Image (cartoon, rainbow, N blue to C red; front, side, top):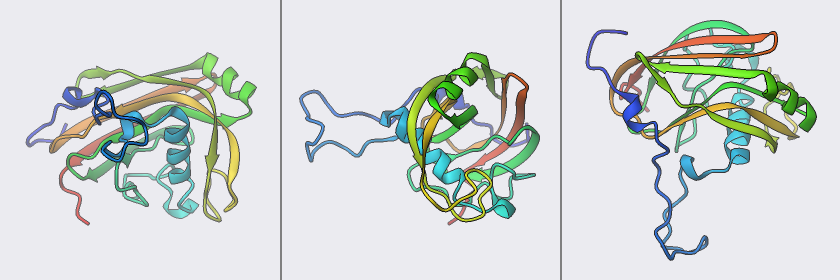
Length: 205
């Protein structure tokens, strides 16, 4: 871990973005906007895959060698991190303070049966500092991916309807500071390992 004020992400690993209060209907205008914690597994996966497919190969965060592309096309209400297409990577990423962080440990798309087969083999571990982080299992779910021409994920600018599945992490708003995040995932012969040096609060618009 880099020197300087460190952050303890585990204090916010619960799915923190609050839901509606008792008695409020789903369409009640008093209900606060839904946060990352409240999104369905289909919404989370569709949004992340569309983000991963929103950059061409030359600037794609999944093939990013060192973190230089981690800010590409980030949404306003979350910060997505990426694994790799297989293999290892070490990245440095500056992100805004108090932004929920979402990422897959290992994830796949394909037919429902293909996804189910991958999930039967999927294993993953996430460590922040020296502490393990709970991983969320997302079973095969129908999703929609919108990409750009030349992206290495779907390789098309057309909308792709498919199934998504995987092991995921959703962190609540992250406090400022620096810290190390490691992501390790496997499924059969596929494996990835990514180390992120995160600098929270040093990202500028």
